[in-house]
Length: 201
Image 1 (cartoon, one colour):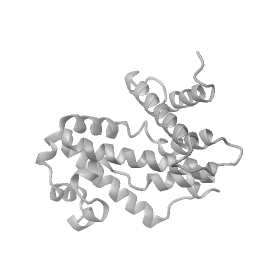
Image 2 (image 1 turned 45 degrees about the horizontal axis):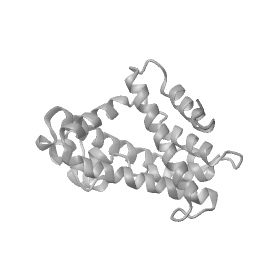
Image 3 (image 1 turned 90 degrees about the vertical axis):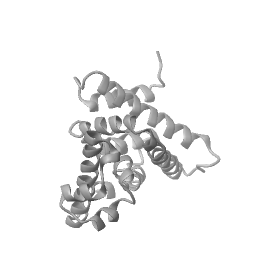
């Protein structure tokens, strides 16, 4: 069993549940009221925890909305590095990201709420984009680590990471645009099959 597949301990599950509850409450309130009408106190009251607990997970309210999951980069790193040696780097990325998106069909409401909040509050975009940029750099670094290459001077890790991000984005956008009439996994796998085939006509 790989590190990425090992079950979380009770303490870690409780911490993740609390973080998810806080992020979810903040996001729903921002979508309903506008972020200018949401306070940390209101979020913690809705979840039933203290303000101090909120700041154990997030440095500010905006971070709870734009960066609800802070440990996905480390999970991704472990999953890519622990993937079977016979898998290509692209295959390792495909499976690692599939684990992260395993619950997307049940969690699509959060994605849609986040998109709506970002559209209504452009001031949140810099933080959101900064978080995405950090995730992209982490992806380049782990691909380079798996391949034994330099993330700063070798092209291949950067290229693999960026085409992977594009494939995931295309799969999510198509799945949403189609009204989620097909499973996300089928669209996701089709995107990566096209990548592996070289995007031939």
